Amino acid sequence: MKVLVVMGSKSDSQIAEKVTAVLDEFGVEYDVEVASAHRNPKKVEELAKKDYEVFIAIAGLSAALPGVIAAHTVRPVIGVPVSAKLNGLDALLSIAQMPPGVPVAAVGIDNGKNAALLAIEILAVKNEELREKLEEYREKMRA
Image (cartoon, rainbow, N blue to C red):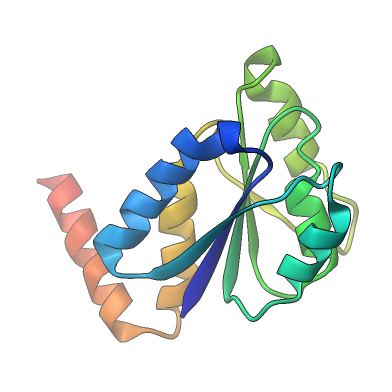
């Protein structure tokens, strides 16, 4: 059970830290990589072909990263739009408007926490321990 967190650039590290903090809290294994869909698309393609269960792609501006990953895998891809320009609206629209057949889930702008929680929910479909941890987490939120 492993998640790959891909940042478009090192400037996305603050959001990646929010993702990895939640994954750590739930005991989910992950790797973190830096790969730009525009500057090194071959590396993105190679990463997408690796055996991860969920991909989380953090990108701003044109935010092509989650779409490029999704084009090369049949695993779930979650895009985290970054508020680099236009308050992140450009990145959000780029992620949300994938062509038919290339689905990408999008979470709120700069919302690494929700990306991690969505990845955990996806993993919890087949993992009872994660389901229980999610239920406990939600119970704490209610309290």
